[in-house]
Image 1 (cartoon, rainbow, N blue to C red):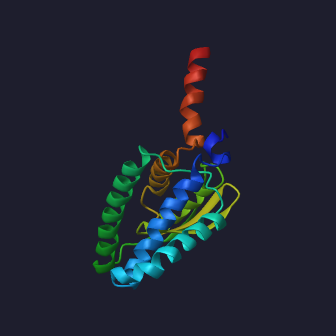
Image 2: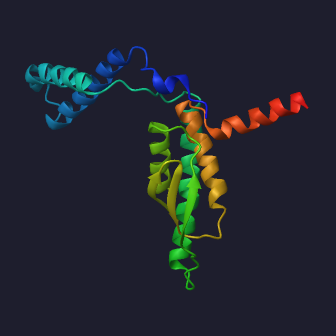
Image 3: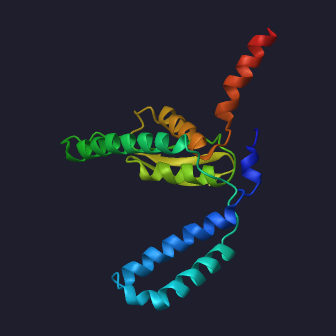
Length: 186
């Protein structure tokens, strides 16, 4: 499996970016706690800067970034799937026959080990009708509400969207490339 270069290299400028992020996050928290009182910033500003510096120092450098191309794609996919799945689960809950066929499936992960894979497993649990149970090696056990649904196909779509979001290559990306190369050599 080909690894993305970004998976192993800390992001350039991560320290400055994290310092700005943490400064803004702590400043918003201070503003909320102080109820927007301008006089509180006499104590708040040094506190926010100290908290941001400590947070930046304690947080390890991130080896991943979300891609600009991947963010809207993930938001659209996840939002649409959540709404569709929510209606489906609600319909099943109020249906007199309770049309469910629960079960457990094993899904072979194609994302590289690391943050993208964990994010994928967590995103599955946020989608209605599926819950990630256990990840071991390249396998993920998932509890499914309806085994009659095309669960593997939907998981493959979500995995592709997550690979674009994180800018990492997965085994899904390698298969078409391998087929194209085989076609040229034939």
